[in-house]
Length: 528
Image (cartoon, rainbow, N blue to C red; front, top):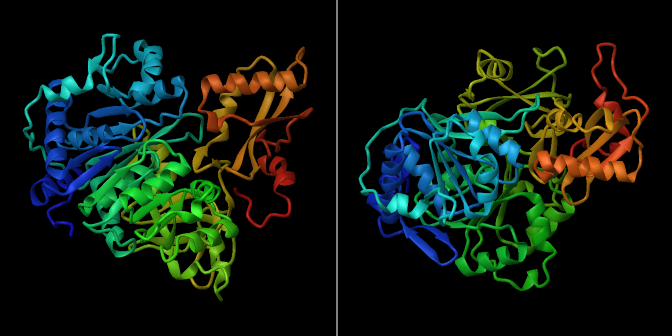
C-alpha cells in the first residue's frame, strides 16, 4: 500500500527504498533491482548530477530506449528537485538537438544506440556541460557506470513542493516546434491514487513497462505502478512475440499498451497457446481500437479486465476511462465501445461550440475542454502558448472534437486542430510542412492524415510542384527521403498527391477538411 508520506516523485524511491527494501522494483531481462538498490543508485546519480552543476529546477536530458537507467536518472534528478527530460529517440537528429537545447539541459545522458546522433549534434548544444554515454565510448564522453559508481550513495535530501515540475515531456509542435509540457508533483499525485482505485495497481502488482518512457503512456504509467511500490518489468523493444513470452515468464498482472500492439500480438503464431492467467488489467489508449480487435483481445486474454484511457500529455494522461463492464461487444451497451468512457475522479468535461465560449447540448459536436488537477502547469518558456491552451479558470482546450451523450460518455468525432495520430504518436502537419517547403521540388504543400489499416492514420503530402520540377514517382521518393533526414519516420509522409493549387479560404488558410474529405468519406469517425 502506498505510504501517505509520498507527495513528490523523489518520495516514491525514498519511501519504498526504506519500507520495502528487498522487494524487486525493476526487472530488465536478467537484471533485478530491489527498492533498496534503486534508492542507492538514485542517490549516487543525484550526487553525480550535483557534481556536474545540476541544481533545483535544472533540466537533465535522457536519450535512450526503455531501460533501468531511465529510472536512475529520473529519481536521481528528483532528489535534487531537478527535472529529467526524456527525449523521443524516434526523432531525427535536428529534432533531438532542438529539444535538448530548448530544455536548457546541463547534462545529456545517451544510450549506446544513439552515440552517432550525439556525435552529430554535440557541437550544437552549447548549454550542455556534461555528455554521459551508457555503456561507455571511445569518443571522449563520460562513461555512465564509472560516473555513477564514483559517487557516495547519499541522498542529498532536497525536497520539492506540489507546484514544482516533476516531469517535462515534449509534445509535437502545433506551429512547427515541439513544446515542453511541464507536469508538476500535484498533477501526478492527483492522478496516482486512481491507479489503485480504478486500475487495481498495488504493491504486489507486476507491471509491464512497455510503452516508450518519453510518452505519458510509458513514463506516467510506470510511475503510477511505482507509487504503489510494485515490480515494474521493462520491455526495451516492442517485439509482439517476445512480449507474449515476457507476460508468461514474468507473470505480468498489469499493462498499458496502444491498440496497434494488441493487434500485432493477435497476429503472432501460437498466441492462443500462451499462459495469460496472471493478467488482471489491460489499459489501452493513445489511438482508437477496432471492435474486431477489441473483441478478439477480450476473448484471448479473459478474464483480464480491459480499460480504455483517453487523455493527453497536457492532462498527465488519462482523464476519461471506459470501464470493463462496457467492453462486451455483444452486450446491450455495445455502442459505448466507440466512446472513450466517462470522466475520471476529479475531472470535469465540457463541449464548447464554434464561438469558443458556449457549451453545446448533449449529442452535439464541439471542442472537448477538460478541467482537472491533472491539467499541466504550463508550456516551458511559452507563457503565451499556455494562455491560449488553458483558460483563466483552468479549462484545457484539447483540440479534439467530440460530443457527450446523455449518460456522460465521451465520443471523439474529429480534431479541431489538424493533428494526425499515427500509431499513437502525435504528428502536427505544420511541423512537417515547414520541413517539406525546403525541398526544391515543392512550391506549396499541405499535410493531412489519411486512413491506414495498421497505424490508424498516416501523413499524406498534397503538393504543388515547383517550376522546373516534375510531378512523378521519382520526385515523390525524393521528397519522402528528404523528410526522413529531418524528421522522425512516423511524421514523414508515406504518400504524395499532386495538385495544381491548394484550396484556401479568403484569408489564405488551407482548407484541410476539404483535402481530407475524400479519404474519410463514409466513416463515422474522422480520425484514425
